[in-house]
Image (cartoon, rainbow, N blue to C red; front, top):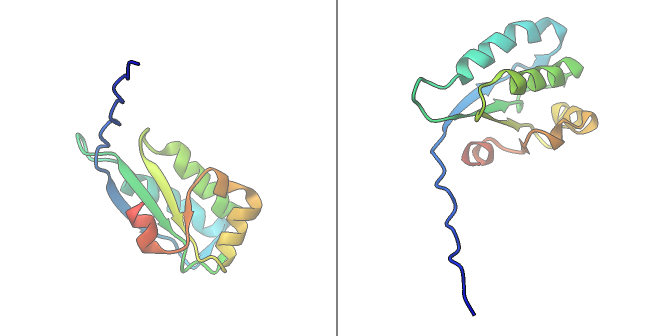
Length: 119
């Protein structure tokens, strides 16, 4: 019996982690100013590794559909290869909003910051 060699997985390029803490309230009045800030911070440096953007919602006490829209727009506007992770307290409003809207299916959501930064 002939065994074919098992190809080794492609080596992953290291990624640079960018942490962006979000405010206590995310609604219509705050999202317009946040979008350009987040996108500019998440842009990779020329020739640099792809970035992983970690959006920290652990301090967010209120978030409506505008917060979900913000996270989705960030995902769509970032350079290809940039990953988005979200941190939200499991018992917080932001986590419930992400669950109800289905965004958790498209974006990894972590319960704590160290876990999200290490992923």
